[in-house]
Amino acid sequence: MLRSMYAGISGMKNSQTKLDIIGNNIANVNTTGYKKANINFQDMLSQTTSSAQGSTGNRGGVNAKQVGLGSQQGSINNIHTQGFTQTTNNPLDFLIDGDGMFVLGGGSVDGDDGVNVNDERYYTRSGNFSFNDDGFIINADGLYLLGTDGEAIQIPPGSQDFTVQNDGSVTYIAEAGGQPIAAGNIGVARFSNPAGLEKVGGNLYLATNNSGLMETDGDGYYTPGEDGAGTLRTGALEMSNVDLSEEFTEMITAQRSFQANTRIITTSDEILQELVNLKR
Image (cartoon, rainbow, N blue to C red; front, side, top):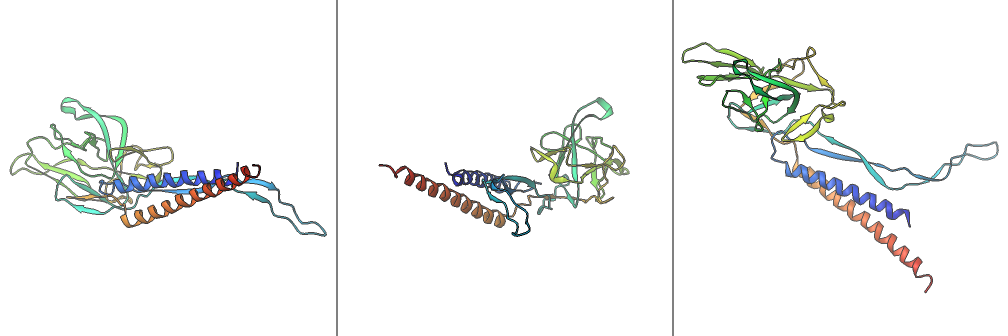
C-alpha cells in the first residue's frame, strides 16, 4: 500500500483531535476559571532510503534521502493566562489577580476542633464559594477552602458580618458592636509549571511530578499579594480565557487540514485503482 495513504490517515486523526480540543474550549467558554488548551504536532519517524555520505577527495557529500511517514501529537498544553473578569458583588466570590490558585481539601468536621482535612489537595482558579451549615467556606462540590496554614476557614454561624481583604485575611464580627475576630487567611498555591497540572473535572486540578508545587516554608501556602502571588479580589469571578474568534479560526484551520488529508487518501486510492486496472 502507498505510504501517502497512511500519512493521510495520521493527519486526519490529528485534525480530529484538534477539533475535539477546540470543541471542548468552546463548550467551556462560560466556565468559571477554565483554562483553554491547544495541541502541537510533530512529524513521525522518516523512512531512510539512502544514508548521508561525507565528501571525498574527488566528489562532494550526499544528503540522506528520507520519506516522512505522517504526523503525530507533540503536546497538549493548558494555557494559564488570566481570564476575563466578571463582577458579581457576591462577598463569597473571589478572584486571584495574578499568579496562584485556590487550595481545596476534603475532610470531616471534628466537633469544636474544626475540620480534619485529609492529605489530598485540589487546586482551582474558580472562586465561587459558599458556606456550609457549620460556617466553613466550601466550593460547589463541598471541598473546604484552605488557608495559608492548610486549615479550613470558618465563620461561626450567627456571626453578624465578615470581611475578606485583598491579602486573603478573613475576619468576622461575632455580635453586634463587637470587634473583628480573625478567622484565618486564604492561601494561594503557586506552581513553577502550571501547564503540568492534571485536570480532574469540576474546575479542579491535581499537582503532578512535573507541575512543581512551590511552598513558602515547606508546608504552607502563599499569602495573596506576597512573594509573587496574585492579590485577592472579592465580589468578582475569573471567567474562561477562551477567545471565541481565535477558536473559530483554529476550527477552520483544522477543518481544512482534515479535508486536505482526505484528498491525499482519495488520490492514493485512485492510483491504486489504476494499478489494479493494469491487467483486465
